[in-house]
Amino acid sequence: MKRVIVFVAGATLALAGSARAQAPTDAQIAAIVVTANQVDIDAGKLASTKGSSADVKKFGAQMVTDHTGVNKQATELVTKLKVTPEDNPTAESLKKGGEENVANLKTLSGKAFDKAYVDHEVAYHQQVLDAIDKTLIPSAQNAELKALLVKVRPAFVAHLEHAKHLQASLEGK
Image (cartoon, rainbow, N blue to C red; front, side, top):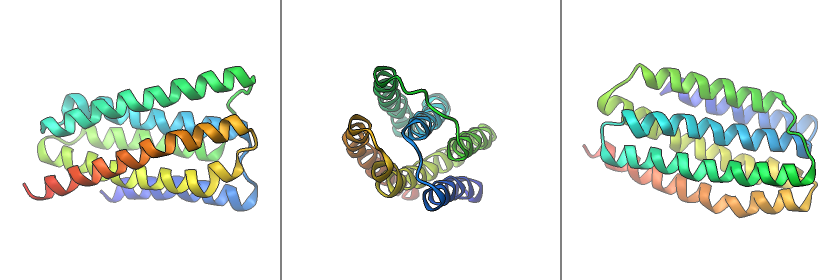
């Protein structure tokens, strides 16, 4: 669990640090959005097959479906706008943390896997929401990019609430 929180906090600090130094550009925001979604897709794929509870498997599959949809929308928009996502320290931090999370999850099984996955989902979705609200939406210059971020925000809220519900149900077992 500590590794998960360190990853999420590190990604958030990278976002906050870049916001203070210089707001991310639209191209950098595009890379952050795609990377953040891919991190959740990768963990969701693992949870949908390795989870021990049917609810965890179902939630993992939902994360794959929902975040794949967001990435499709983001990719279509950046293609339309002729914006090439630009790698940046925040996107790199997210990718590294996601890889570390999946590697850690692969070492777990049963209830330990379920708990670690769901705990990460709660922390990750809260941090992503904070980044959307405090950095990504305020920094987006293109109106369509900003509108996409605003449009997908409720899904992240719903994912957070669902993950919190799962977390509470796992603690009761």
